[in-house]
Image (cartoon, rainbow, N blue to C red):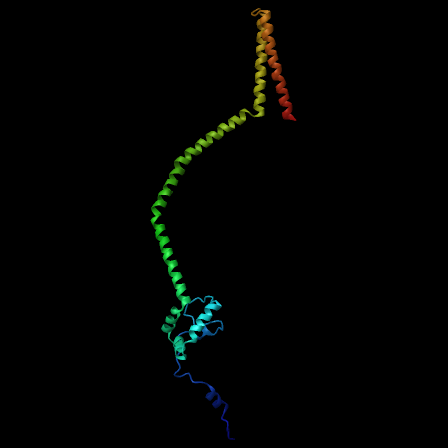
Length: 218
């Protein structure tokens, strides 16, 4: 039986376009399969965000290219790189990158120039820690000990104890004076005057001692 329209294999062979003679792109086809890709990317290039305004500017530049020029951009890596670096957006980014590089180098040089000063300051800090700081710490410890002694001396317990000692001393003086009177070593008028003064002092201190002790207990 005759096949007027040709076999299925012949139709597929006729419909398949021949790739012979067409320029081969320098980039991998997988790099442009994404619909969001506006241009081919070089190997290892990290895709960056392109704003609508920037994309419109790039499209406007590509719009003026002929079909041959566009094909050359796709097939010639050097031509693509030259076109890429001619874009204003890329030029601005390169200028910013260069300025950042120069500023980084400038800061690095300044840090290197200040290194001797930093070393000197470190040495001074080490000297302060080992000598002056040790002296200051010793003086601080001495002052803290003095403070503790003063607080202990004027503590309520210490004051009551010294007041009790003072009462005992006055009481002993009273007994000694009384013994002198018994031994006829002092006349009556002088004895009465001194004894009365000593007993008044004793009772005054005794009242203060009692009031302080009661207050501390309450």
